[in-house]
Amino acid sequence: MTIRGLITIALCFASAGWVRAADITGKDRNNLPIQIKSNALSTDTVNRTATFTGKVSARQGDITIYCDRLVITYSEKEKEVEKVEAFGNVRILQGNRTAQSGHAVYENKAGKIILDDNPKMYQGEDEVAGKVITYFLDTQRSEVTSDPDSRVFVIIHPKEKKKDGGAKP
Image 1 (cartoon, one colour):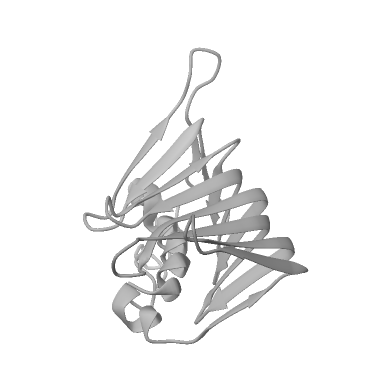
Image 2: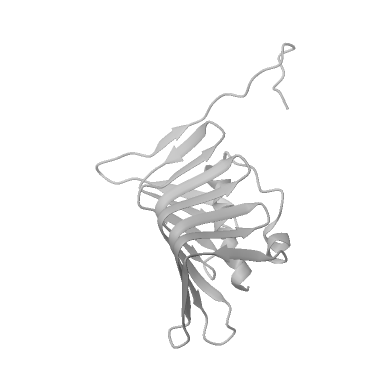
């Protein structure tokens, strides 16, 4: 996977079983160009990182990620993305889906995305929140955890019904 893999963070929208898969698959998305804008970029060859800071926006296909700082860590041998971390005011947009948190991590080898620091996910009016939201990309499985002082919170609005009794498309 190349730097384009960082946008797979947005696949977290399939979390909690109430979100459909994106119209563009991960393989298709990796073939699209990525645009990253920030106030500054710092690279560190020794530590294999690229750090974007200040009003960061990363866009690939139908997905946009906003944050204060984005750190990409590369593997030593293949120069592939190993881990992507988004810090501060993290917001991920895709169609009518939005995720927000103070911190998000995409772990390439484990195939998972972890949203923490007050994570919330929305699709339309539906919402899920907890202490940590973890989405496993390969199995489209998610876990939302809480701590002793809080509980997992989910709002799922019923679908509108047609007059003939069937659900609206």
